Length: 593
Image (tube, rainbow, N blue to C red; front, side, top):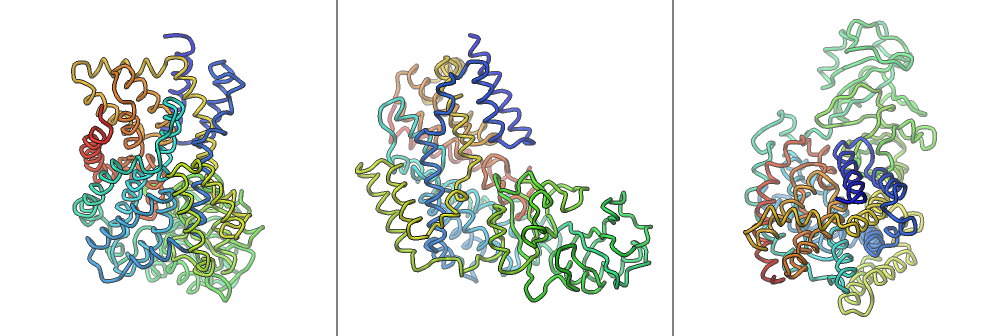
């Protein structure tokens, strides 16, 4: 091994270790790795920022803006609401919603597709009095599968297409992914609807009666409420509240005084004016307990109850890359700037001892916000959260739906027929959407997931350096030696398994950047069609179903669904095996070796 190869492998090993650790944001890890690579000389300084102008980076940013426009126009949501009919059996509901998620993900970013359908699915679960966990995981997996169908459905497809252009002179087209992706998506959705959802632990009755009645885990929060000067709790001990708390379906789990929380549940402490009670309950339980005990919420406005004339609740889930991820309510100055209180936090499978407003928010957390009704949707959007309630129809511009759809369809047609490059065509759509205020100018940059852009822009030069230094050829040789004597088909399947495994524990974008050059090296050494190996990487990198960290959609549903880390593989492992079983023969059929 050369010095450059050793440095690059060490650097990538550190990146993978930090991404697995998960304590530092992936975009910061990637950018620090790029700076380190330039510092040690394995990435030339002149090429350090080439990744930020790479076609794949530009196209992904444009796709995110277009997805926001399709959402804002109401075109997608109108369709989504029609498919969530009441009275369907669970099998029928999962079949329809999964099919819709896959179809939408083929036409827009799969995270955006899930964001549109997830509140509708949860509302349907509440009306049917069933656990949301039974339907959210199928919805997430189906949205991931749908991204396989077209070039713009998922970032790995865009990256693979761009790398093909660099290596072979022409990219994959918009629908070159469709024959393989469509078969994998149809087979996957059929499995999800018929068998997969039955493998989710909640399907076998895990959870309490409240969950079965529709009060699923997303509604349980750790919250703080203030003891007002007229509260009847003053002078009582915390343990004396047991009967009141039980009647309101609330658990009193702590006491805060002068900014410091007492250890344990502080059951022997006497309650004083201005103390903060730490309680665990759903939103309705919090409101009832506050009203019964004469409590207040700690914010700029004080009410006897939590719901006043102009105040309301909003529940939002925190996706990866949200503005509030890694920060606290105090950091965001929600009360001071906006009159909004972070009333409670739900974090499935983890307890926390910090005060709610000082708690560092993580991806997957569900937040209970309280504030003026008219401000809540705007503040939720600024925080980067996804509302779990039905979307407010007043912000949807349905009169512009056909304009948005028409512009998007024209761009796809122009790119498919070769009249315009995909980046240029999508750029025209973005201009139209901004010009007609479908995507307001103030939302143009918030529509782009900048952590993904930074990750991609940082990792592309490192991936190119690994290829230039012969590192990918070294990995390709190792894979060939491992599969010696089994032929190119076995090597292709091995490549899919390795890529899929990496994608389950790392970001699928980073996985693709590393795996696609290895695929090209493998094809060259075997003297076979490189398109088959590139297509194998595209499929495998997108199919991360074993963990909540393998794909953003899996992280997004973890809190609302009440899932544990180990719940995903039960449904996901058979799905990954199925994807390999159906897509490998299709790859060989459509892209013969």
